[in-house]
Amino acid sequence: MREIGLLVLVLAPCFGIAGLVWDANQGRESLPAFVWAASICLAFGVLALLAQELMFRRQSEFAGSLGSILLRTLGPMLSAVILTAWRPDLVRHQIFPAFVGCYLLTLAAETILSVCLIQRWERRERGRQKPSR
Image (cartoon, rainbow, N blue to C red; front, side, top):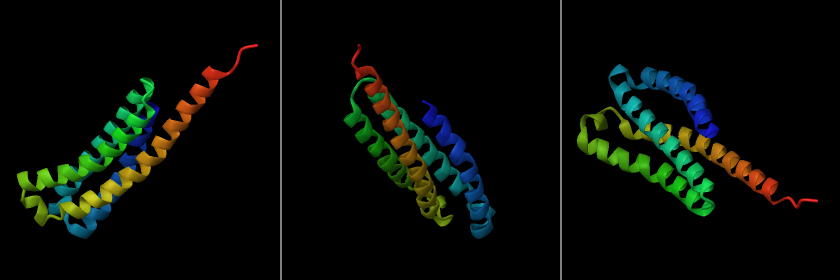
């Protein structure tokens, strides 16, 4: 679960800086679109790591990795489509570029932390399998 905390710790300042850049380039009226995109991408990044951790605890490593990939990829994409249907005004405020930027930041951080999670579980399994003397 520490990977989830690290994800939030890493992405909060990254999204803050990206939000300032977004505000400077797109204007204040486009900031809600960025906040929606950042919040949704962060939420699905957390869900992806949580799903992977929970499945690893059940010795379903493949299902955990696959579920993580599906959550981190399909979640933000479907959310962008649903959000633009629900709030068409966000299209005018460039929500799709906001989603792409936030998605790529989340993807990079979540992928690195996912690899750390896999390595941690592999070390744990090797420690359990050491022969006793």
